[in-house]
Length: 271
DNA sequence: AGTGCGGCCTGTCCGC
DNA sequence: TGCGGACAGGCCGCAC
Image 1: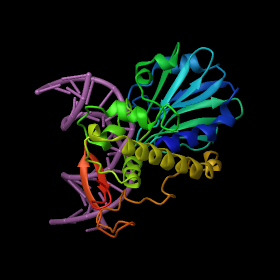
Image 2 (image 1 turned 90 degrees about the horizontal axis):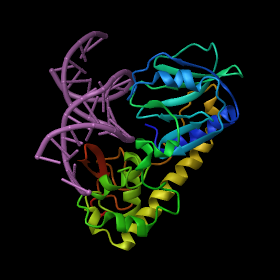
Image 3 (image 1 turned 135 degrees about the vertical axis):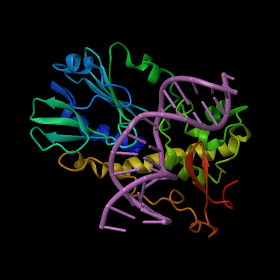
Image 4 (image 1 turned 90 degrees about the vertical axis):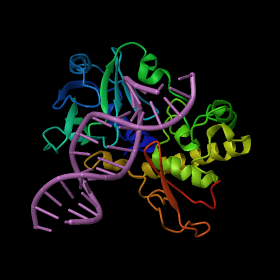
């Protein structure tokens, strides 16, 4: 389940091996991802040099002069640098082969991820054009959240997980940030006052920031390892702890479902 | 327009 | 021990 910190860690991990390097060949073993891998990916990306590796939300963009490979890791995807000829693991669906003798290997058991080929400005692509601000940017502020949430009746947790509001806040970090901010996940978004917006924005930034820093220590895993940096190394206060005592007040944590997602919170500390 | 839900997938876990 | 079913979740696309 790569969340934004994992995607950013992946970006940093693969960048040194891809930047200004030529993609010699693209091998698609299993095109049936969330969307079919287009034939144009192999025909157009082969022979191109990667000019930049960017991240927008949980999307990675491999930019070339001719176009952009847009990659999403979905729920179970990962990218790693394999040595060409290295035995394939189950669900190694796509290889981007480099001249160095390595290849960027896309692995995704559940196939919720995608790899698309975009020509023209990738940020005008429908998948990217309507996305909300980056959570770690100054555009994501208490004032922004207050304005955006006005009149909205959806629960605040569902709201902050909406990529059109702010990108990159997945279920785990939504639970953690709401606990840290002392906000009830079920609270209607439109009832948030500026002070609550301030603490929620602050905690979202803090939890993501911390996770990226932890991810940075596992960068070496992108070559020869399993390519899966983890948020599990950080202490989770509520996620997966339903029924256990709140670390703040010892009240048993409650769980419910919001938008079909596991939601865990402290009934005493969060309101 | 906003809200909520179905569907895509497979690995893991649980109960029988 | 083996088996089937529930569950997990990002995010689009649809229905209300």
